[in-house]
Length: 330
Ligand SMILES: Cc1cc2nc3c(=O)[nH]c(=O)nc-3n(C[C@H](O)[C@H](O)[C@H](O)COP(=O)(O)O)c2cc1C
Image 1: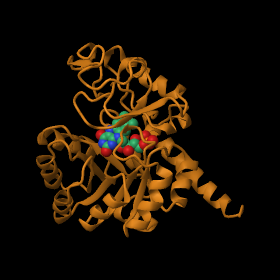
Image 2: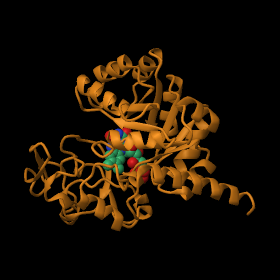
Image 3: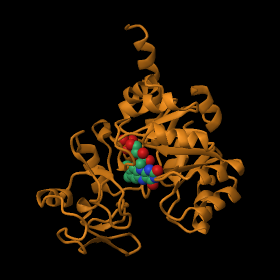
Protein backbone atom coordinates (compact mmCIF):
# COMPACT_ATOMS: atom_id res chain seq x y z
CA UNK A 1 0.00 0.00 0.00
CA UNK A 2 2.86 2.39 0.77
CA UNK A 3 4.29 1.98 -2.72
CA UNK A 4 0.80 2.25 -4.14
CA UNK A 5 0.33 5.62 -2.45
CA UNK A 6 3.59 6.97 -3.91
CA UNK A 7 2.69 5.60 -7.34
CA UNK A 8 -0.78 7.17 -7.14
CA UNK A 9 0.52 10.55 -6.01
CA UNK A 10 3.62 10.36 -8.20
CA UNK A 11 5.55 11.78 -5.23
CA UNK A 12 8.86 10.77 -3.64
CA UNK A 13 7.86 11.05 0.01
CA UNK A 14 4.58 9.95 1.59
CA UNK A 15 4.06 13.32 3.24
CA UNK A 16 1.14 15.50 2.17
CA UNK A 17 0.64 19.12 3.11
CA UNK A 18 -2.81 19.54 4.61
CA UNK A 19 -4.97 22.06 2.80
CA UNK A 20 -5.42 24.95 5.22
CA UNK A 21 -7.83 27.67 4.09
CA UNK A 22 -6.09 31.04 4.20
CA UNK A 23 -2.80 29.60 5.49
CA UNK A 24 -1.63 27.18 2.79
CA UNK A 25 -1.28 29.24 -0.36
CA UNK A 26 0.71 28.55 -3.52
CA UNK A 27 4.10 29.27 -1.91
CA UNK A 28 3.64 26.66 0.82
CA UNK A 29 2.09 24.04 -1.44
CA UNK A 30 4.76 24.49 -4.11
CA UNK A 31 7.53 24.23 -1.51
CA UNK A 32 6.12 20.90 -0.31
CA UNK A 33 5.77 19.58 -3.87
CA UNK A 34 9.29 20.71 -4.78
CA UNK A 35 10.64 18.97 -1.64
CA UNK A 36 9.29 15.60 -2.83
CA UNK A 37 6.06 15.66 -0.83
CA UNK A 38 2.57 16.06 -2.23
CA UNK A 39 0.76 19.38 -1.94
CA UNK A 40 -2.95 20.03 -1.58
CA UNK A 41 -4.20 23.55 -2.22
CA UNK A 42 -7.50 24.76 -0.76
CA UNK A 43 -9.45 26.60 -3.47
CA UNK A 44 -13.00 26.12 -2.19
CA UNK A 45 -15.38 28.99 -1.52
CA UNK A 46 -14.21 30.79 -4.67
CA UNK A 47 -15.87 31.16 -8.07
CA UNK A 48 -14.58 28.85 -10.80
CA UNK A 49 -12.45 31.52 -12.50
CA UNK A 50 -10.55 32.07 -9.24
CA UNK A 51 -10.04 28.31 -8.93
CA UNK A 52 -8.43 28.37 -12.38
CA UNK A 53 -6.30 31.38 -11.38
CA UNK A 54 -5.18 29.54 -8.19
CA UNK A 55 -4.18 26.48 -10.20
CA UNK A 56 -2.23 28.63 -12.68
CA UNK A 57 -0.48 30.43 -9.83
CA UNK A 58 0.63 27.15 -8.28
CA UNK A 59 1.70 25.72 -11.64
CA UNK A 60 3.98 28.72 -12.10
CA UNK A 61 5.83 27.66 -8.93
CA UNK A 62 6.06 23.88 -9.40
CA UNK A 63 5.94 21.32 -12.18
CA UNK A 64 5.05 18.59 -9.68
CA UNK A 65 1.62 17.05 -9.16
CA UNK A 66 -0.84 18.41 -6.62
CA UNK A 67 -4.50 18.20 -5.66
CA UNK A 68 -7.12 20.90 -5.25
CA UNK A 69 -9.14 20.79 -2.03
CA UNK A 70 -12.91 21.33 -2.37
CA UNK A 71 -15.49 21.60 0.41
CA UNK A 72 -18.60 19.49 -0.24
CA UNK A 73 -20.80 21.63 2.03
CA UNK A 74 -20.19 24.74 -0.12
CA UNK A 75 -20.95 25.02 -3.86
CA UNK A 76 -18.39 22.72 -5.49
CA UNK A 77 -19.73 21.46 -8.82
CA UNK A 78 -18.47 24.33 -11.03
CA UNK A 79 -15.20 24.33 -9.10
CA UNK A 80 -14.80 20.59 -9.74
CA UNK A 81 -15.47 21.12 -13.45
CA UNK A 82 -12.83 23.87 -13.45
CA UNK A 83 -10.31 21.42 -11.92
CA UNK A 84 -11.22 18.87 -14.58
CA UNK A 85 -10.87 21.43 -17.39
CA UNK A 86 -7.47 22.43 -16.04
CA UNK A 87 -6.38 18.78 -15.97
CA UNK A 88 -5.18 18.88 -12.37
CA UNK A 89 -3.66 15.69 -11.00
CA UNK A 90 -6.24 15.25 -8.25
CA UNK A 91 -8.93 16.61 -6.00
CA UNK A 92 -9.23 16.36 -2.26
CA UNK A 93 -12.84 16.34 -1.07
CA UNK A 94 -13.91 17.02 2.49
CA UNK A 95 -16.80 17.90 4.79
CA UNK A 96 -19.42 15.52 3.47
CA UNK A 97 -19.76 12.39 1.38
CA UNK A 98 -20.80 12.62 -2.25
CA UNK A 99 -20.20 9.39 -4.17
CA UNK A 100 -21.32 11.21 -7.35
CA UNK A 101 -18.56 13.81 -6.96
CA UNK A 102 -15.98 11.05 -6.54
CA UNK A 103 -17.34 9.24 -9.60
CA UNK A 104 -17.33 12.44 -11.70
CA UNK A 105 -13.70 13.23 -10.87
CA UNK A 106 -12.66 9.63 -11.53
CA UNK A 107 -14.48 9.52 -14.85
CA UNK A 108 -12.51 12.63 -15.86
CA UNK A 109 -9.21 10.93 -14.99
CA UNK A 110 -8.39 12.74 -11.74
CA UNK A 111 -7.24 10.99 -8.60
CA UNK A 112 -9.52 11.47 -5.60
CA UNK A 113 -8.45 11.90 -1.99
CA UNK A 114 -11.47 11.62 0.30
CA UNK A 115 -11.33 12.87 3.88
CA UNK A 116 -13.28 10.81 6.42
CA UNK A 117 -13.76 10.48 10.16
CA UNK A 118 -14.86 6.84 10.37
CA UNK A 119 -14.31 3.42 8.80
CA UNK A 120 -17.91 3.34 7.54
CA UNK A 121 -17.36 6.54 5.54
CA UNK A 122 -14.08 5.20 4.21
CA UNK A 123 -15.91 2.16 2.82
CA UNK A 124 -18.46 4.35 1.02
CA UNK A 125 -15.66 6.46 -0.50
CA UNK A 126 -13.67 3.41 -1.59
CA UNK A 127 -16.78 1.84 -3.17
CA UNK A 128 -17.38 5.09 -5.07
CA UNK A 129 -13.87 4.85 -6.55
CA UNK A 130 -11.70 7.07 -4.31
CA UNK A 131 -7.97 6.43 -4.70
CA UNK A 132 -6.81 7.53 -1.25
CA UNK A 133 -8.57 7.88 2.09
CA UNK A 134 -7.51 10.72 4.36
CA UNK A 135 -8.50 9.66 7.88
CA UNK A 136 -8.70 12.75 10.07
CA UNK A 137 -8.49 12.19 13.81
CA UNK A 138 -10.04 14.40 16.48
CA UNK A 139 -6.65 15.86 17.45
CA UNK A 140 -6.60 17.78 14.17
CA UNK A 141 -6.55 21.55 13.87
CA UNK A 142 -9.10 23.57 11.94
CA UNK A 143 -12.45 21.99 11.10
CA UNK A 144 -12.68 18.47 12.43
CA UNK A 145 -15.13 16.14 10.73
CA UNK A 146 -15.19 13.14 13.10
CA UNK A 147 -14.78 12.51 16.79
CA UNK A 148 -12.41 9.52 16.83
CA UNK A 149 -8.77 10.00 17.79
CA UNK A 150 -6.07 9.32 15.19
CA UNK A 151 -4.71 6.40 17.25
CA UNK A 152 -8.03 4.55 17.11
CA UNK A 153 -9.18 5.76 13.68
CA UNK A 154 -6.23 4.74 11.52
CA UNK A 155 -6.22 0.97 12.19
CA UNK A 156 -10.02 0.85 11.89
CA UNK A 157 -9.94 2.60 8.50
CA UNK A 158 -6.95 0.57 7.27
CA UNK A 159 -8.86 -2.63 8.07
CA UNK A 160 -11.97 -1.39 6.29
CA UNK A 161 -10.59 -0.53 2.84
CA UNK A 162 -8.24 -1.88 0.22
CA UNK A 163 -6.78 1.46 -0.87
CA UNK A 164 -4.03 3.58 0.73
CA UNK A 165 -4.90 5.48 3.89
CA UNK A 166 -3.24 8.76 4.84
CA UNK A 167 -3.27 9.70 8.54
CA UNK A 168 -4.21 13.23 9.61
CA UNK A 169 -4.48 14.84 13.04
CA UNK A 170 -1.78 15.38 15.63
CA UNK A 171 1.14 14.32 13.41
CA UNK A 172 3.79 16.98 13.75
CA UNK A 173 7.18 15.24 13.67
CA UNK A 174 9.02 12.06 12.72
CA UNK A 175 7.75 10.23 15.79
CA UNK A 176 4.16 10.91 14.81
CA UNK A 177 4.82 9.84 11.22
CA UNK A 178 6.50 6.60 12.34
CA UNK A 179 3.57 5.85 14.65
CA UNK A 180 1.02 6.48 11.87
CA UNK A 181 2.89 4.16 9.52
CA UNK A 182 3.00 1.47 12.24
CA UNK A 183 -0.77 1.82 12.58
CA UNK A 184 -1.04 0.90 8.91
CA UNK A 185 -1.21 4.30 7.26
CA UNK A 186 0.67 4.67 3.98
CA UNK A 187 1.40 8.35 4.46
CA UNK A 188 0.75 11.40 6.61
CA UNK A 189 -1.10 14.71 6.17
CA UNK A 190 0.51 17.55 8.09
CA UNK A 191 -1.37 20.71 9.04
CA UNK A 192 -0.46 22.51 12.27
CA UNK A 193 3.28 21.86 11.97
CA UNK A 194 3.31 23.53 8.55
CA UNK A 195 1.63 26.62 10.00
CA UNK A 196 5.11 27.26 11.40
CA UNK A 197 6.69 27.15 7.96
CA UNK A 198 8.11 30.33 6.49
CA UNK A 199 5.68 30.05 3.59
CA UNK A 200 2.45 29.82 5.64
CA UNK A 201 0.40 33.00 5.21
CA UNK A 202 -0.61 33.66 8.81
CA UNK A 203 -0.41 36.68 11.11
CA UNK A 204 2.64 37.00 13.39
CA UNK A 205 0.47 37.04 16.52
CA UNK A 206 -1.11 33.71 15.48
CA UNK A 207 2.33 32.26 14.70
CA UNK A 208 3.72 33.35 18.10
CA UNK A 209 0.78 31.76 19.90
CA UNK A 210 1.45 28.47 18.08
CA UNK A 211 5.13 28.50 19.01
CA UNK A 212 4.27 28.93 22.71
CA UNK A 213 1.25 26.61 22.99
CA UNK A 214 1.21 23.28 24.78
CA UNK A 215 -0.75 20.16 23.78
CA UNK A 216 -3.42 21.20 26.31
CA UNK A 217 -3.96 24.69 24.90
CA UNK A 218 -6.41 23.86 22.11
CA UNK A 219 -10.16 23.60 22.42
CA UNK A 220 -12.60 21.58 20.30
CA UNK A 221 -16.00 23.22 19.92
CA UNK A 222 -19.09 22.53 17.88
CA UNK A 223 -20.15 26.07 17.19
CA UNK A 224 -17.77 28.61 18.67
CA UNK A 225 -16.44 30.03 15.37
CA UNK A 226 -19.55 29.36 13.35
CA UNK A 227 -20.05 32.65 11.49
CA UNK A 228 -19.51 32.06 7.74
CA UNK A 229 -19.51 28.28 8.31
CA UNK A 230 -22.23 27.07 10.71
CA UNK A 231 -22.59 23.60 12.20
CA UNK A 232 -18.96 22.69 11.62
CA UNK A 233 -16.95 21.50 14.66
CA UNK A 234 -13.42 22.84 14.90
CA UNK A 235 -10.28 22.98 17.03
CA UNK A 236 -8.44 26.21 17.79
CA UNK A 237 -6.12 27.67 20.39
CA UNK A 238 -7.83 28.94 23.50
CA UNK A 239 -7.97 32.76 23.50
CA UNK A 240 -9.89 35.67 24.98
CA UNK A 241 -12.98 34.83 22.87
CA UNK A 242 -13.08 31.14 23.82
CA UNK A 243 -12.32 31.90 27.47
CA UNK A 244 -15.19 34.40 27.83
CA UNK A 245 -17.54 32.03 25.96
CA UNK A 246 -16.57 29.08 28.17
CA UNK A 247 -16.95 31.14 31.35
CA UNK A 248 -20.45 32.15 30.17
CA UNK A 249 -21.37 28.44 29.92
CA UNK A 250 -20.80 28.02 26.16
CA UNK A 251 -24.03 29.75 25.05
CA UNK A 252 -25.47 28.77 21.67
CA UNK A 253 -25.17 30.99 18.58
CA UNK A 254 -27.63 33.84 18.87
CA UNK A 255 -27.18 34.23 22.63
CA UNK A 256 -23.43 34.77 22.89
CA UNK A 257 -21.80 37.93 24.22
CA UNK A 258 -20.75 40.58 21.69
CA UNK A 259 -22.02 38.60 18.72
CA UNK A 260 -21.88 41.29 16.04
CA UNK A 261 -18.78 43.01 17.35
CA UNK A 262 -16.26 43.89 14.66
CA UNK A 263 -12.88 42.83 16.05
CA UNK A 264 -10.72 43.51 13.04
CA UNK A 265 -10.43 43.74 9.29
CA UNK A 266 -9.18 41.51 6.50
CA UNK A 267 -6.38 42.88 4.32
CA UNK A 268 -9.04 43.87 1.75
CA UNK A 269 -10.84 45.98 4.38
CA UNK A 270 -13.78 43.62 5.01
CA UNK A 271 -14.73 43.36 8.70
CA UNK A 272 -13.95 40.32 10.82
CA UNK A 273 -16.56 39.79 13.55
CA UNK A 274 -16.27 37.89 16.79
CA UNK A 275 -17.04 34.14 16.37
CA UNK A 276 -16.22 34.29 12.66
CA UNK A 277 -14.54 31.31 11.03
CA UNK A 278 -11.48 33.09 9.68
CA UNK A 279 -7.73 32.42 9.45
CA UNK A 280 -5.85 35.66 10.30
CA UNK A 281 -3.56 36.57 7.40
CA UNK A 282 -0.28 38.51 7.73
CA UNK A 283 -1.98 41.86 6.98
CA UNK A 284 -5.13 41.29 9.06
CA UNK A 285 -5.67 44.21 11.45
CA UNK A 286 -7.40 44.50 14.81
CA UNK A 287 -7.65 42.12 17.75
CA UNK A 288 -5.98 39.12 16.07
CA UNK A 289 -5.60 37.25 19.37
CA UNK A 290 -9.42 37.08 19.66
CA UNK A 291 -9.88 35.48 16.21
CA UNK A 292 -10.11 31.77 15.34
CA UNK A 293 -6.50 30.60 15.76
CA UNK A 294 -6.89 27.09 14.35
CA UNK A 295 -4.52 24.52 15.82
CA UNK A 296 -4.24 20.79 16.42
CA UNK A 297 -3.09 19.13 19.64
CA UNK A 298 0.27 18.37 18.01
CA UNK A 299 1.10 22.06 18.49
CA UNK A 300 3.48 21.15 21.35
CA UNK A 301 5.87 19.86 18.65
CA UNK A 302 5.78 23.20 16.84
CA UNK A 303 8.71 25.11 18.25
CA UNK A 304 10.41 27.00 15.45
CA UNK A 305 9.79 28.58 12.08
CA UNK A 306 11.55 26.84 9.20
CA UNK A 307 11.22 26.57 5.43
CA UNK A 308 8.56 23.99 4.51
CA UNK A 309 11.14 21.96 2.59
CA UNK A 310 13.24 21.59 5.76
CA UNK A 311 10.19 20.50 7.77
CA UNK A 312 9.30 17.82 5.21
CA UNK A 313 12.88 16.56 5.08
CA UNK A 314 13.23 16.49 8.86
CA UNK A 315 9.96 14.60 9.42
CA UNK A 316 10.82 12.10 6.68
CA UNK A 317 14.37 11.36 7.84
CA UNK A 318 13.40 11.20 11.52
CA UNK A 319 10.52 8.79 10.83
CA UNK A 320 12.84 6.59 8.76
CA UNK A 321 15.48 6.55 11.51
CA UNK A 322 12.94 5.70 14.18
CA UNK A 323 11.35 2.90 12.18
CA UNK A 324 14.78 1.39 11.51
CA UNK A 325 15.73 1.69 15.20
CA UNK A 326 12.42 0.17 16.32
CA UNK A 327 13.14 -3.11 14.55
CA UNK A 328 16.15 -3.68 16.85
CA UNK A 329 14.21 -3.01 20.07
CA UNK A 330 11.78 -5.94 20.05
C1 LIG B 1 -5.49 26.71 9.72
C2 LIG B 1 -6.16 25.45 9.24
C3 LIG B 1 -7.02 25.51 8.15
C4 LIG B 1 -7.60 24.35 7.64
N1 LIG B 1 -8.37 24.41 6.50
C5 LIG B 1 -8.75 23.25 5.88
C6 LIG B 1 -9.33 23.28 4.57
O1 LIG B 1 -9.52 24.34 3.98
N2 LIG B 1 -9.64 22.09 4.00
C7 LIG B 1 -9.44 20.88 4.63
O2 LIG B 1 -9.73 19.84 4.05
N3 LIG B 1 -8.92 20.85 5.87
C8 LIG B 1 -8.55 21.98 6.49
N4 LIG B 1 -7.93 21.94 7.72
C9 LIG B 1 -7.69 20.62 8.34
C10 LIG B 1 -6.38 20.06 7.79
O3 LIG B 1 -6.50 19.74 6.43
C11 LIG B 1 -5.91 18.80 8.54
O4 LIG B 1 -6.90 17.81 8.53
C12 LIG B 1 -5.45 19.06 9.95
O5 LIG B 1 -4.67 20.23 10.03
C13 LIG B 1 -4.62 17.87 10.42
O6 LIG B 1 -4.31 17.95 11.77
P1 LIG B 1 -3.02 18.70 12.37
O7 LIG B 1 -3.36 20.14 12.32
O8 LIG B 1 -2.93 18.17 13.73
O9 LIG B 1 -1.84 18.37 11.50
C14 LIG B 1 -7.37 23.09 8.27
C15 LIG B 1 -6.53 23.04 9.38
C16 LIG B 1 -5.91 24.20 9.87
C17 LIG B 1 -4.98 24.08 11.05
